[in-house]
Length: 200
Image (cartoon, rainbow, N blue to C red):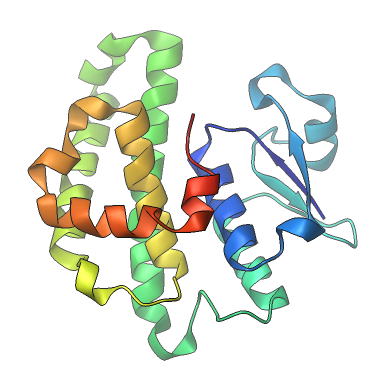
């Protein structure tokens, strides 16, 4: 398999963490690239020019990190990240994590192209409100005592999103606002898969 990625995409990091947790990293060649430069090899496998893009052993390209997660969970014999016993709960958390990632990532990209004044636009203010609501909800739902030795897709998505928020939008100060969520997050990112994939 091949994984097209860069070091700062929260979506690519989610895919790498899943590969590590599923003990599949040795079966994948990491193809580091710049999606903003219309990387030729990336465009050949994913015409949208987006990362991550996972090319399976039979040459099929998967182009959304959550879809990759479902696929990788299915081809590994490790403990499922999408356990049938509480699938709705896991997908609920995965959705919150995905939405937080999207709001934070879109804010960062909008600022890159239009400057910080874009935050005052209708969409900028909407993204900011979404970030505030989601972090507040995560604080009410996630507790360090709930963590098990195995990890679910929902927990990975939320932890990656929160880490990305701290990395790219530190002015949000979610750790100061939500000490309970901070403790949960600290316990999750202590895992080796998060340490190996830290944003830089």
